[in-house]
Image 1 (cartoon, helix red, strand yellow):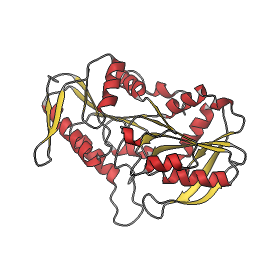
Image 2 (image 1 turned 30 degrees about the vertical axis):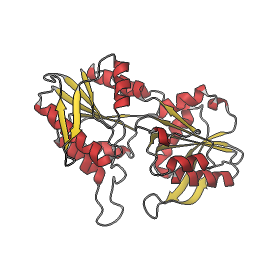
Image 3 (image 1 turned 90 degrees about the horizontal axis):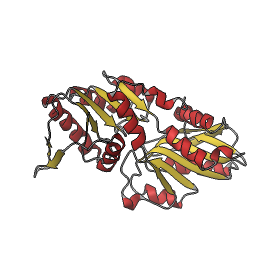
Image 4 (image 1 turned 30 degrees about the horizontal axis):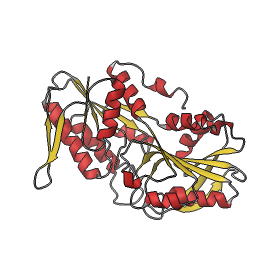
Length: 315
């Protein structure tokens, strides 16, 4: 088994390699003078079970193309099996046609990755579960919810008498219910919203009782922070005492970090599936490690052991 990484999140790859007790594979990825990406594998991969770790995060076009080129390099280097570990799967928000003449970019990305030589995919909290079906190769879909849930249990959230888990949209109800059950079967609430345009949100209604409650909002990602902040303001107006936000992917586009710090949200908890530059860190933010989850999944895939057993407490 060998683990390699592109430039998207080398720090996470180092932590996964440490968990596995193996050195990170030697690979050079630079750019030609015109901006084209140049990849060179600096050690033999012939006959190896190769894992490539690369979230397709910002800058999404560069990280995606770098991944495709790495796949081609290892395919031509006669790797026995190529597994792509994509902690954050970019271009996933257009997973269906909602208006005429729209692309389905999530399917396009899946086709590109598959045709470039990937034989197995590992993802964490896809934006939509059905994206697994866009690939014609096996997909191991990992959940970061247990990481968030165990941290909250350690922090005493499960002992709160007036705790409610809130889904910021109807699509995330399953995620919210799983966290609620992990925290001892606390009730859930749902924010019904619509998006008049990308990164804009209108709250229609709050379903469930939040008055006098401490609310934990859980989502797969926080991008601009608009949904989380608007949702928090609405449920506080409905009588909630506090709002804690948590997510898997801390995208934090633009000035999202400052907006979250200045918002009514009391705390933000996320994982490190995407790199968070120091300039985007803020006092309210807590970042939890995802390397043990990714490393254990990689180990189990290599040894042909069950991956789903990792989520026995997350249904």
